Amino acid sequence: MFDIAPQELLVVGVVALLVIGPKDLPKAMRFVGYWVSRARGVARQFRSGFDTMMREAELEEMEKKWAEENARIMREHPPTPQQMLPMAVVDHEDGGPVLVEPPLIVGAPQPEALPAPEPEPGRDSSTISDTAPATAPAAKRARKPSAKAQS
Image (cartoon, rainbow, N blue to C red; front, side, top):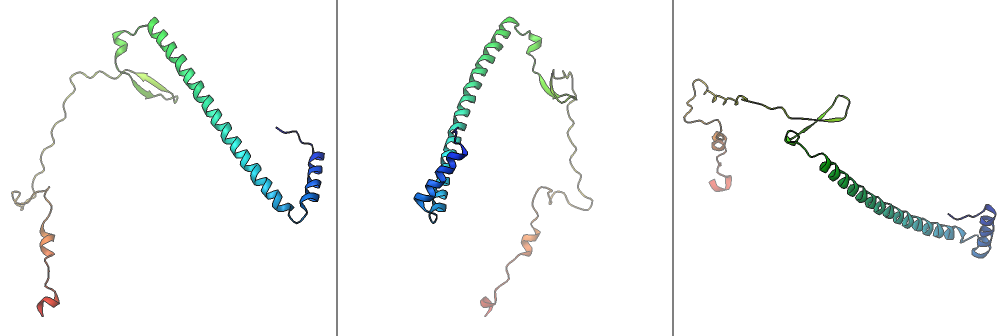
């Protein structure tokens, strides 16, 4: 970036010591360091934004090329009706995905309905429902009269 030799830095340091003085030199160095770090941060942010824009432009260009190449391949090799079946992606033992055709299921049996649960012996199933919430705890929580109301 800048080509500053150690001798030039030494000359700048001696001049700063004579002009600013030994008492205020640490404050001045902190001030200069603060602004140098801010300038570096702005430059870093600008560079990263520029790099992001370049990557996006390159990506758009690559996607355009891939779309053109895909269209050319599809024109040269149109798909047959057999190839139009939906495909599934399955992870292969080697770690890479592999496209496979879904299995064709002919005459698959329908799942049977589960039988209704039988009521417990000794319980009247017409009054108590398994899905209805229990109301007995609500009856136990009846209000007791307060001491002030009785007196």
